[in-house]
Image (cartoon, rainbow over all chains, first blue to last red):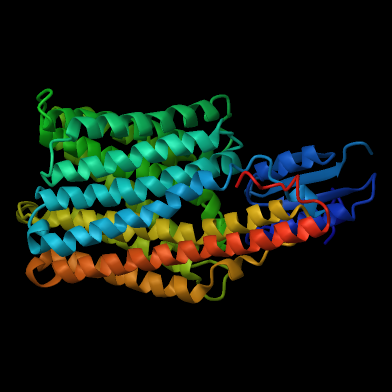
Length: 78
Length: 442
C-alpha cells in the first residue's frame, strides 16, 4: 500500500489486537535508518508511543476527520 | 524486534487480575443467595434478599471488574498512568471485598454493619477515585473516551457519596428521605458511572475488538457531557421530590441509554467479522437487554397502573444489571484476560520466547458454553420476577452454574499463563538470560 507520507504502510484499522502491535514491531525491525513507517489505526496507541521512545524511535501522530490516526515512525537518530 | 514489546506502561498483571478472578465469586454468592432464599427474595425490590442480591451483583461483580479494568485501561486508552498500580489494586480490592460482604450481610440482617460497610467501601472506592483522578489530571480531553472516563469518575464519586449517606441512614446515624436518595444513588450508578464508563470504553473497544465502524463523531462528542448534565439536573429534582421534573429528566436519561444501545447494535450489524464471536454476542445480548429495559420504562410511563406493581422495578433491574452490565463485562473479560496473558508472556519472553496465540489462551467453545448458561440465567431471573414460586430457585441455580463456568474459564487462562511462564523461564535459563526476566513483577 502506498501513501503520500510513506511507502511503508500498515493499515491496522480492521485488525484485532495484538496484531497491529506485532505487525508494527516486525516492520520496525526491518525499517532502514532514514526511512519512515506509517501506521493507520482508529485509536491513539499510547503504549506503543512509550515503547517507541524507549527503543530509539520518534513518531508523529495526526488525527483525520474520519477518525483515522496516522502514526509516522522513524529512527530517532537517523 | 520482540524486545520492544515490553509495555513499560502496562500495570503488573496481578493488579487487574485480582479483581477479575474474585468477581465470579460474588456472582456465585448472588446465585447461592437466590437458591437459598427462594421466591421470597423476588417479591419486591425492598426484600432483604433482593437488596443483598443487587449489591452482590452491582458491587461484587460489576463494579469490581470495572475497577480492575480501569487500572488496566487508563494508560492504554488515555495515556494516564496510575501511580503504584499494584498497591492501589491491593488496597482497593481488599476494602471492596470486605465492604461488599459487610453490606450484603447487613441487608440480610445477619449483623448491623451498614456504617462499617460504608467506611470500607468509602475508603476503598474513594482511594480508587482519588488515584484515578490524579492520573487523569493534566490529560487533555482530546478524545471522547478521556471525557467519558472523567464523567464516569465524577459519577462514581456521586454514587459513593449517596451510598454512604444511605448507609448512615440505614445504620441510624442520621435521617434522610430514603426512597428519593435511593433513586438518586441508583440513577448515578446505572447511568452516570455505569453507562459513562461503558460508553467511554466502547468508543475504543467496540471498533477494536468487534471490527465495526467507529461511533459517529456527533454521537461520541456529546454523549458523555449530555449524560452528566442530565444526571446533575435530575439529582435535586429527585432528592427534593419534584416528581414531574424528575420524571422528565429520568426519561431523558433512559432515552440517552436507549440511543447508546441502538447505536452499538447498528455498528455491530456492520462488523467486518463474518461470524460474531462470543464477546460480540455478549455485547449484542447486553444492548438488546438494555433496550428492553428502556422499553419497559416507557411502558410503565404510559401505563401508570403498571408502575404500582412490585415486579417492574425488579424486572428493570434484572434487564439492566444481569442482562446488560453482566453480559458486557463477561464479554470484555473474554477479550481482556487472554490479551493480558499474551502481553505479559510476551514481555516475560524478552523476544526470545514467543507467547502463545490469544485463541490458545482461552478457546471459543468454553466461552460460548458459559455465555449460553449466563443468558439462560438472565432469562430465568426475568421470568423469576414474574413467577417467583416457579423460577426463583432455577434462576439461582443457573447463576451459580454461570459463575462457576466463568471462574473455570478465567482460571484456565491463568493456568496457561503459569505453565507457559515456567517454559519461558526454563528457555531463558538455557540462554543464560534468566535473571533479568522482564515481566517478573506479574
